Figure 1 (cartoon, one colour):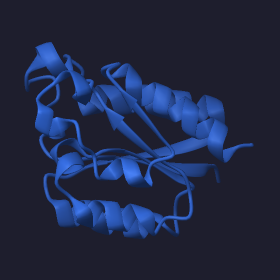
Figure 2: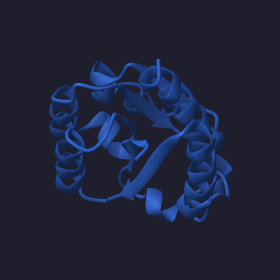
Figure 3: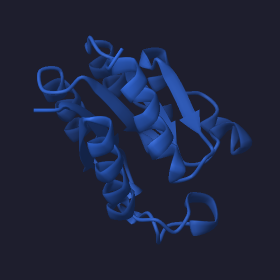
Length: 146
């Protein structure tokens, strides 16, 4: 059974393709997941994609991943800037965490410049739109298949 990478997506990311496409693009999470599944297979990995608008659900999924996954890629969306609970859950993980953003938060509103999640992340990928998910998978593959 291939090693599993969890891709977690926070609030409003279920609306990708509809929500502000000039910022977030036209791809849906389903479109992104389809590409990730194909690339993960080629890399000998498995990908599990989840999204929730509820902070506690994300915390629970992170806690559960501690025993089922070898890494997490998280696009925490608005929880990036507000959630100590997500940070605390990620800090309990004994595997790599990559923080991911479709846009570059540093080119946006000042309140988006601070990330709690960054404290738990091995690295951050931002500003590459939906392609960032594939970049994150490639980076995670390097981290977990040394």
